[in-house]
Length: 158
Image: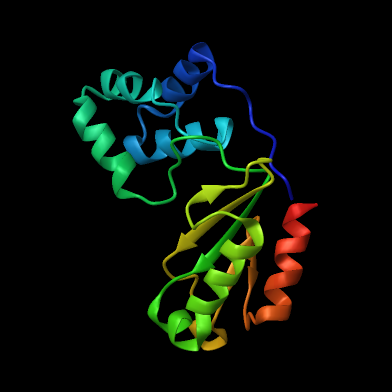
C-alpha cells in the first residue's frame, strides 16, 4: 500500500485550500487534505492557508506543529510507526524501537537515505491488550516481537 503523491504545486495547493475553506474546522481539514495530496504540508502552504481562513501564520503554524502526524517533508515510500505509549513500552517496546533504529540506520522521526522507509513514533494505536504494536502503511500489527519486527522492516525495505 505505497502512496503516490503529487509534487508540490502552488496552484494545486490553492485549489485544495479553496475546496475546504468553508468547512467546519477548516484548518485541520485543509492541512490533512494538503498532506494527502502532497505527502506533507509544504512550508509555502502555511501562509496560503492563513490568508484563506483570515488567520495569522502563527495560528496555522501552531495547529500544524501541535499534531504529530503532519510532516514538514515527504515521508519515505513506506511508513513504519512504532507505538511509544506506556503499555507498549512496558511490554518491550523500547527494545523493539532500538532494534528498528539499528536495522534501518535512522532514529525515530527520520527517513532512510534511500527514501524507502520513514520510522515514526506514535503515541497509542489502541492495541494495548496486544502490546507492543506497530503500523506499517496503515496496517495495524499487534503482539510485536523481534521476529515480527524484523519481517516488517524487511517488507518496508523492499
